[in-house]
Image 1: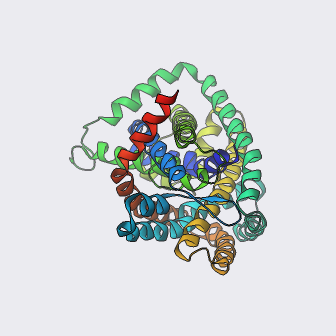
Image 2: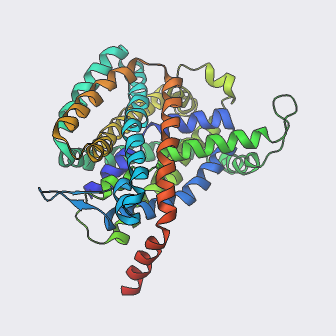
Length: 390
């Protein structure tokens, strides 16, 4: 259970609120449809990733399991493929600072400033201390914190989102219709460029979908590899569940709230807000009385982002550990730097943080997807054997 909640901690983050809001403003309602499409295929890729991570994981001298794309690429495909494994670990090590820290810290700083008027620098320092204390305890400490934090934060946001949707339930059919029709809209946009609307919707939908559910990135398998189970297919089922909860449930709640709010969309409209999170706050506030919506969003962003930072600290540690043959000095240095990067994220430019995270995501996904394709036969065999026995 701690392996699942640690993976969900890394998966359910600011992408579910701030990222989705930004995607709809820039790509229109059609971006939601392409998020759903990415989730449908993402369930398959995440299942495959986790099954392989259990199949090819290693056990260290302390009895702890470790695995992930770098291990299943090297062990499953042979030593000749090790450069690809190294490439993944290198990109993953740097991505832990982007998707897993900088973009999350930026949203936490915005939430704390909105809730309590706290200066971003102060938030960054406090966050660095909290993260440092937790990650020094290793995967067990992270798992313990995640097992309490994730169910609470997900339930809190889902219940709040359902309440918002129920308040405008009569407008939901029209919102759902706009998602589908906008996904295939060939209206002329930007001076007669046909198809631009579809391109923008697809780009935003897939980018935010992958950022949110992390299917294909190879991150979650590292947490699942640490689990106590010996059955690859059984643990892989949780990957399907993760993508479903993350994108089909939580991201859809955010999407419907933004669409039901009636706020004007477009890049110019998004630029009028201080951050993507601020745009989400405005959407909730138009439906809920007073400033309740803003408080809900800011509390959710705070917990979503904090849990993601903790989950990704473990992923980064595993990547740098693989590259340096589990050097204790390198792991200790990584933890110290990772905690301090929270200050950089809290005080940096919001848009730049998202652009960095998107770039690192893409670089990380490429070697992993190549490995998944090459090992697809193994995934099929694992699955057939599992269901044949049952």
